[in-house]
Image (tube, rainbow, N blue to C red; front, side):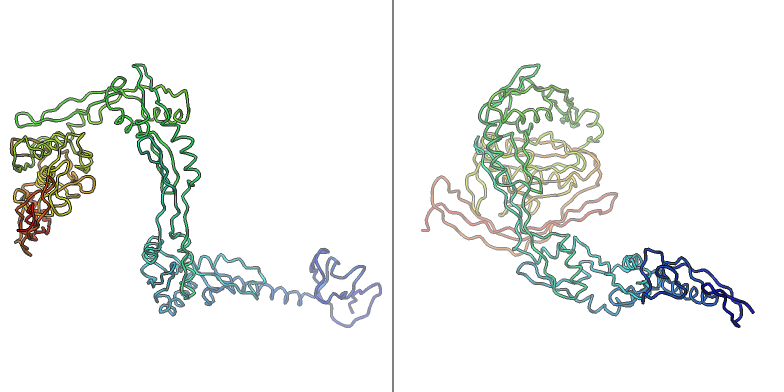
Length: 606
């Protein structure tokens, strides 16, 4: 008979002997088990604070097996148990099984998720299609988020948690769609500025934009799409960085003092006085997209304002060029120069302009190489004439109109357009006013001929346009006349007017292009020199249609009245056909509708 000791006295027992095992219970710092009563065999203090309790081996195995089994069940799969997305239980599943289950749920909801979403932007309401703006649930990212969900071991057995799906959207497409709904409710930001009228600085005060915040818009639309409810997209005000008060401060502390007195630029070759009028032209206040106003001295504009004054200090570099001699291009060498360091001069001038005295800066002369050297010029491959075009003008060289044509031709002659560059006639000549040598001559304004400075330049524009057209160069911008003039080819012609109408072409060849102009007493000719890459460039015309007859208009007689015989109006198509290696490689359509030019009579009706 085995004896087991309980307390201090031996007890006689007829039960069989069993093995006992020590099991650790919670430490002294932990609370007692539920119930709180002392367990059997308790010594001093509560029994749960006693270090170990003896359990029968069979009981121990049962407890441990239960714990291990529950743990294995709770931690099965990649996604923690009790985790759901859109009400679908993904817990306990592998990533692939969870993704498959979530896709199945999305298929069930397809009709709802694909339905147009109502959005409210300001006072406007409209619907957008989710697919048009890229609204979708990213299944893999959602499963990854569900897998990473934190869950306490006990929560894995008994708890539950919801994970929001990861929704994607094409932010750019959504923003474009929402801005269309916003419409005229939106308002562009008024950027701050300081402009000079003569030498008087005037403020342009900033105003906030009324616009959309793309990030905020995407956030509310993603949430609203899943909820299946109309979404109100917030319209926000965006204030410029520079305030009204800061604009006033810049005027008081910089703009006004800047033009209060001249500034002297000194150098090793002498000095130049910069008058307030030149300072006003060179001092620029520009704002970035955020509305931050920054002052800067534009040295290029300063040179223009000072004209020949800087010749006492600087020697301007001259680009290498080409001239046509004996039917071939001939190189005109360039030359280096010495110029004031623009960056340093801009910085130093800006530092002294707010000061009432000590308004002197020392300019540093640096060697200035021409932008286009003889070596670079040789690489452009300008070796032969690739197109030429002439038009006739009446009146001889003495008429103001003819002189304007010739002046424009002189301004452009010798221009080299590098590969990839875009030539702008307005950009090249600048404003064509009296100071530039242009005179008053008839121009079309408001549907009739009136005197205007620079009249006739449209004929040079047409000639230049045709030369670029027949060279196969890319047309960027041109506008035919409102009325048809027989001295020009129909449709293939162009007008110009400063600053609203321009003529532009792009050199879309791998070679440079030289513009060469010549004239006689009644013709103007423009030729393009480069390397020939096309066999031919020709024009094919469609028939004239929609022909309309002119009406007679009687005008108030006087110096401003210009009589005209009038012309019919019509619509016509012209096709530029470009061939290379015996095949048509381009066929481009040009169309234009001419208004009937009235028969203008200077005088009342009979």
